[in-house]
Image: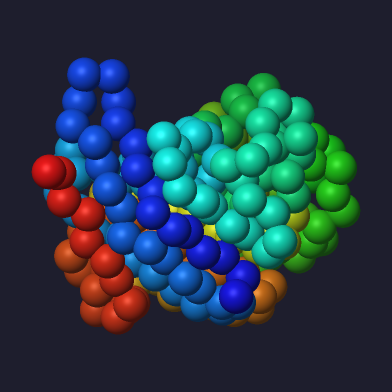
Length: 210
Protein backbone atom coordinates (compact mmCIF):
# COMPACT_ATOMS: atom_id res chain seq x y z
CA UNK A 1 0.00 0.00 0.00
CA UNK A 2 1.43 3.37 -1.04
CA UNK A 3 -0.72 5.74 1.04
CA UNK A 4 -3.08 5.26 3.96
CA UNK A 5 -4.71 7.15 6.81
CA UNK A 6 -6.32 5.84 9.96
CA UNK A 7 -8.61 7.44 12.56
CA UNK A 8 -7.80 11.03 11.54
CA UNK A 9 -9.38 13.64 13.82
CA UNK A 10 -8.89 17.40 13.92
CA UNK A 11 -10.66 20.41 15.39
CA UNK A 12 -10.01 24.09 14.82
CA UNK A 13 -10.14 26.21 18.01
CA UNK A 14 -13.71 26.58 19.19
CA UNK A 15 -15.07 24.37 16.40
CA UNK A 16 -16.60 20.86 16.44
CA UNK A 17 -14.15 18.02 15.78
CA UNK A 18 -13.82 16.54 12.29
CA UNK A 19 -13.54 12.75 12.06
CA UNK A 20 -12.41 11.55 8.65
CA UNK A 21 -12.90 8.24 6.85
CA UNK A 22 -9.83 6.04 6.49
CA UNK A 23 -8.07 6.18 3.11
CA UNK A 24 -6.09 3.43 1.42
CA UNK A 25 -4.49 3.92 -2.01
CA UNK A 26 -1.92 2.18 -4.17
CA UNK A 27 0.23 3.51 -7.02
CA UNK A 28 -1.90 4.93 -9.83
CA UNK A 29 -5.10 4.96 -7.71
CA UNK A 30 -7.38 8.01 -7.72
CA UNK A 31 -9.72 9.19 -4.97
CA UNK A 32 -12.26 11.98 -4.92
CA UNK A 33 -13.03 13.75 -1.64
CA UNK A 34 -16.41 15.46 -1.94
CA UNK A 35 -18.04 17.89 0.45
CA UNK A 36 -19.77 21.24 0.70
CA UNK A 37 -18.07 24.42 1.81
CA UNK A 38 -17.21 24.18 5.52
CA UNK A 39 -17.40 20.38 5.58
CA UNK A 40 -13.68 19.96 6.33
CA UNK A 41 -12.38 19.17 2.82
CA UNK A 42 -9.50 21.64 2.95
CA UNK A 43 -8.68 20.61 6.52
CA UNK A 44 -8.41 17.00 5.32
CA UNK A 45 -6.21 18.01 2.38
CA UNK A 46 -3.90 19.91 4.75
CA UNK A 47 -3.70 16.86 7.04
CA UNK A 48 -2.90 14.56 4.09
CA UNK A 49 -0.15 16.91 2.91
CA UNK A 50 1.42 17.31 6.34
CA UNK A 51 0.47 21.00 6.46
CA UNK A 52 -1.61 20.35 9.62
CA UNK A 53 -1.01 17.92 12.47
CA UNK A 54 -4.05 15.81 13.44
CA UNK A 55 -5.18 15.58 17.06
CA UNK A 56 -5.11 11.81 16.55
CA UNK A 57 -4.53 9.29 13.77
CA UNK A 58 -1.84 8.47 11.23
CA UNK A 59 -0.93 9.54 7.68
CA UNK A 60 1.38 6.98 6.07
CA UNK A 61 3.13 7.57 2.73
CA UNK A 62 5.45 4.75 1.75
CA UNK A 63 7.11 3.83 5.04
CA UNK A 64 6.89 7.30 6.60
CA UNK A 65 4.27 8.55 9.06
CA UNK A 66 3.84 12.28 8.38
CA UNK A 67 2.32 12.81 11.82
CA UNK A 68 5.65 11.84 13.40
CA UNK A 69 7.67 14.37 11.36
CA UNK A 70 8.03 18.14 11.67
CA UNK A 71 10.18 21.12 10.79
CA UNK A 72 12.79 20.95 8.03
CA UNK A 73 12.59 17.15 7.86
CA UNK A 74 8.85 17.28 7.05
CA UNK A 75 9.34 20.16 4.58
CA UNK A 76 12.00 18.23 2.67
CA UNK A 77 9.93 15.02 2.68
CA UNK A 78 6.89 16.92 1.39
CA UNK A 79 8.92 18.61 -1.34
CA UNK A 80 10.24 15.28 -2.59
CA UNK A 81 7.14 13.13 -2.19
CA UNK A 82 3.95 15.22 -2.24
CA UNK A 83 2.79 17.43 -5.10
CA UNK A 84 0.04 19.89 -4.12
CA UNK A 85 -2.12 21.73 -6.66
CA UNK A 86 -3.62 24.59 -4.67
CA UNK A 87 -6.93 26.24 -5.60
CA UNK A 88 -4.97 29.41 -6.41
CA UNK A 89 -1.65 28.82 -8.21
CA UNK A 90 0.68 30.63 -5.71
CA UNK A 91 3.37 30.96 -8.39
CA UNK A 92 6.48 33.05 -7.69
CA UNK A 93 5.77 36.25 -9.63
CA UNK A 94 9.40 37.41 -10.18
CA UNK A 95 10.26 34.08 -11.88
CA UNK A 96 9.49 32.69 -15.31
CA UNK A 97 7.35 29.59 -15.78
CA UNK A 98 10.42 27.38 -16.11
CA UNK A 99 12.15 28.99 -13.14
CA UNK A 100 9.13 28.25 -10.91
CA UNK A 101 9.57 24.54 -11.65
CA UNK A 102 13.35 24.61 -11.26
CA UNK A 103 12.89 26.34 -7.89
CA UNK A 104 10.61 23.48 -6.75
CA UNK A 105 13.35 20.99 -7.66
CA UNK A 106 16.01 23.09 -5.93
CA UNK A 107 14.15 23.36 -2.62
CA UNK A 108 13.36 19.64 -2.63
CA UNK A 109 16.97 18.75 -3.54
CA UNK A 110 15.44 16.61 -6.27
CA UNK A 111 16.30 16.25 -9.96
CA UNK A 112 12.80 15.03 -10.88
CA UNK A 113 11.38 15.33 -14.37
CA UNK A 114 12.81 17.28 -17.30
CA UNK A 115 11.14 20.68 -16.92
CA UNK A 116 10.80 21.53 -20.61
CA UNK A 117 9.47 18.06 -21.50
CA UNK A 118 6.85 18.28 -18.73
CA UNK A 119 5.71 21.73 -19.87
CA UNK A 120 5.49 20.46 -23.46
CA UNK A 121 3.38 17.51 -22.31
CA UNK A 122 0.98 19.84 -20.49
CA UNK A 123 0.63 22.03 -23.58
CA UNK A 124 2.45 25.08 -22.20
CA UNK A 125 5.99 24.47 -23.49
CA UNK A 126 5.91 27.70 -25.46
CA UNK A 127 5.40 29.62 -22.20
CA UNK A 128 8.55 28.25 -20.51
CA UNK A 129 10.41 31.57 -20.53
CA UNK A 130 7.34 33.77 -20.02
CA UNK A 131 6.66 35.71 -16.86
CA UNK A 132 3.93 34.04 -14.81
CA UNK A 133 2.24 37.45 -14.68
CA UNK A 134 1.39 37.11 -18.40
CA UNK A 135 -0.42 33.76 -18.08
CA UNK A 136 -4.15 33.21 -18.47
CA UNK A 137 -5.99 31.55 -15.58
CA UNK A 138 -5.94 28.20 -17.39
CA UNK A 139 -2.23 28.46 -18.19
CA UNK A 140 -1.39 29.39 -14.60
CA UNK A 141 -3.32 26.34 -13.41
CA UNK A 142 -1.32 24.07 -15.76
CA UNK A 143 1.92 25.57 -14.47
CA UNK A 144 0.69 24.87 -10.93
CA UNK A 145 0.00 21.26 -11.96
CA UNK A 146 3.44 21.02 -13.60
CA UNK A 147 5.09 22.31 -10.42
CA UNK A 148 3.23 19.69 -8.37
CA UNK A 149 4.45 16.95 -10.74
CA UNK A 150 8.01 18.05 -11.41
CA UNK A 151 9.62 16.08 -8.56
CA UNK A 152 7.77 12.84 -9.45
CA UNK A 153 5.88 12.77 -6.14
CA UNK A 154 4.36 9.62 -4.67
CA UNK A 155 1.17 11.52 -3.78
CA UNK A 156 -0.63 14.26 -5.75
CA UNK A 157 -3.17 16.42 -3.89
CA UNK A 158 -5.42 18.77 -5.86
CA UNK A 159 -7.65 21.34 -4.14
CA UNK A 160 -10.73 22.34 -6.20
CA UNK A 161 -8.87 22.10 -9.56
CA UNK A 162 -12.10 22.42 -11.60
CA UNK A 163 -14.08 25.01 -9.62
CA UNK A 164 -13.78 27.74 -12.28
CA UNK A 165 -13.80 25.51 -15.38
CA UNK A 166 -16.49 24.61 -17.91
CA UNK A 167 -17.36 20.96 -18.58
CA UNK A 168 -14.86 20.48 -21.41
CA UNK A 169 -11.90 21.89 -19.49
CA UNK A 170 -12.96 20.05 -16.32
CA UNK A 171 -12.64 16.77 -18.22
CA UNK A 172 -9.24 17.83 -19.65
CA UNK A 173 -7.79 18.75 -16.25
CA UNK A 174 -9.05 15.59 -14.51
CA UNK A 175 -7.71 13.37 -17.30
CA UNK A 176 -4.42 15.26 -17.19
CA UNK A 177 -4.05 14.66 -13.45
CA UNK A 178 -5.08 10.99 -13.71
CA UNK A 179 -2.76 10.28 -16.65
CA UNK A 180 0.20 11.97 -14.98
CA UNK A 181 -0.42 10.09 -11.71
CA UNK A 182 -0.47 6.78 -13.59
CA UNK A 183 2.63 7.73 -15.57
CA UNK A 184 4.78 8.46 -12.50
CA UNK A 185 3.17 5.80 -10.28
CA UNK A 186 1.61 8.26 -7.83
CA UNK A 187 -1.66 8.18 -5.90
CA UNK A 188 -4.03 11.05 -6.74
CA UNK A 189 -6.50 12.70 -4.34
CA UNK A 190 -8.81 15.45 -5.61
CA UNK A 191 -10.68 17.51 -3.01
CA UNK A 192 -13.71 19.31 -4.42
CA UNK A 193 -17.35 20.30 -4.09
CA UNK A 194 -17.72 19.82 -7.88
CA UNK A 195 -20.05 16.85 -8.36
CA UNK A 196 -19.13 16.71 -12.09
CA UNK A 197 -15.79 15.12 -11.20
CA UNK A 198 -17.64 11.94 -10.14
CA UNK A 199 -18.15 11.31 -13.87
CA UNK A 200 -14.38 10.85 -14.18
CA UNK A 201 -13.39 9.30 -10.84
CA UNK A 202 -15.73 6.66 -9.43
CA UNK A 203 -13.79 6.10 -6.17
CA UNK A 204 -14.95 8.77 -3.72
CA UNK A 205 -15.63 9.58 -0.09
CA UNK A 206 -17.78 12.40 1.27
CA UNK A 207 -16.91 14.59 4.23
CA UNK A 208 -19.66 16.24 6.24
CA UNK A 209 -19.59 18.75 9.06
CA UNK A 210 -20.89 17.22 12.29
